[in-house]
Length: 196
Image (cartoon, rainbow, N blue to C red):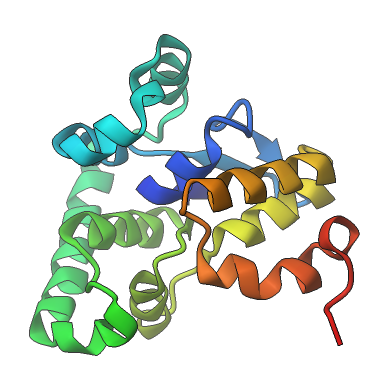
């Protein structure tokens, strides 16, 4: 089963979880992967290119190219049809997704969810609007911390790396609230039991 990293999940994890894509793990034989649309999203954004200059480093670019999910013509047609439904759903009521200062799922977000639907995959994202849209359509999504927890259970990474990732995200001002809320319950061996 494919586990698709969205743009932010890839950018949060790829420098520390090596290799970042192509990893097989767990009893269900999950395969961590990425689609070129994520790469395209970074290349279109001067802000992301400036903030993550390592993204186009040879090691990362070659890994993404070698391990990204590829689609047949039939798959592309099915993804485009599912994408149209998801994106139009969002456009009909974008206000439903903007609580708490969030943005509604983007064209790319909807495309990744459509890909997940067609390939029976799981999307890794910390975007709560994407989680909401996925729930409305019965699609599987994980937070980044859920992926990390599964990687620890599968002994792909260790608790020391969990701590390093949390610290790096905090220093960079990129630690999602959902990660903070669960750090003591999901990773008690790293951060201790919940206070109180």
